[in-house]
Amino acid sequence: MVNQSEKERWLLASTFLNLIMAVGKLIVGVFTNTSVIVADGIHSLSDVVGALLIYASIKLAGKKSKRFPFGMHKLEDFAAFAGGLTIIYAGYEIIKGVVLNHNQTRVNHIFIGTAFLFAVLILQITFAYFEMKSSKKLNSPGVNTDLLNWISDVGTTVVAILGIILSYYGIPYAQKIAVIIIVLVILKEAYNIIKDAFLTLLDASVDTSILKKAEIIIKSHPEIDNIETLFIRKAGSIFIADIVLQIRAKGMETAHDIIEEIERKLKESIDHLEIVTIHYEPAKKKNLKIARFLAQEGEIAQRLRDVAFVEVEEKDEKGNTLSLYKYENPYFEQGRGHSIRLIAWLIKQNVDMIIFHPLEMDSEKLELFESLGIKIEK
Ligand SMILES: [Zn+2]
Image 1 (cartoon, rainbow, N blue to C red):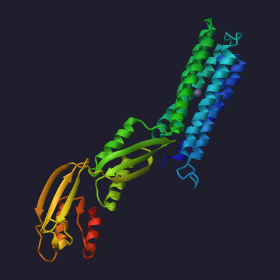
Image 2: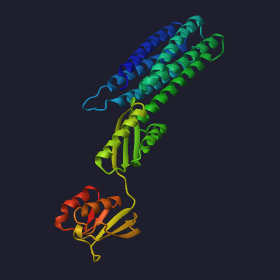
Image 3: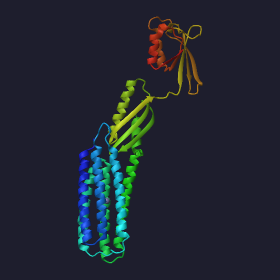
Image 4: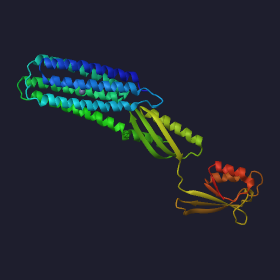
């Protein structure tokens, strides 16, 4: 199981740090009348909302119930989706408030502004560095989203610093351009979050590299004839696989063991694959082998002890005869055990069907044919 509480801790810390930054940026921005810092403050506010949503969903996603036996992993994707929309709204607010406003252009307090933003930058880089180290093993879309957010926030802080310095030295529109860049970063960030969350919510399949890996594992098993369906999807931090296989093994129990082994291998070699459902069916045989039990005179036999000849015909899917051999029954008139030996010989020949006109007395032996998967045509 993925470490639930570690994910929760990261998102809680992220929410808290974003809140401190939002308050700090808004105070410093308003106090120094620096629009780019105000814009970045609004940006941080949207990050508070985003991180909080992810935190709530991770907390809920780990809870399993009768109604949600797999847990509510998709809530994580849903929150990421909602968080993305919030960030787009924040971007719109910044454009409305700063870029379309023709008044504030020049920066007056360069020292307070840049010193403050450098402190912010150091905090952001430190936080992102440690979160990145954790996110590699957590594989949580929530934590990954949060990390991406911090990385792009480092970028927006650098842009804000440049905007303030250039604007202070009289370069026209420097601050507005910086604000526009910050908004573009916010929008791109939001787009990525929304796209991923949306695809997962719609049960899009995972990367082809993961599918390929699963395919190789399954096909490496000699008893697997064909993979009919192989579908792996994501839900929050986990993968779920639905597989239909055609299997060559005859007995139910052997088939079951093979399926269990494949399931174990898949879970071993694909990280975060937690739920595997495998259905299996017998492999479709292309050709059909039919044995006719013939008595001495060439008519269809009525008792196993009367079988003098066995005519074996192999047909393809369309019913065309591929081969036809007539064998003398090697165990004819051999007394005790003749029918069991005949049955063993038919199994060795890989016969699928027998044509025979049996009487009541052989019914026990006929049951044996049925249980071996050989049909009897009367
Ligand atoms: Zn952000």
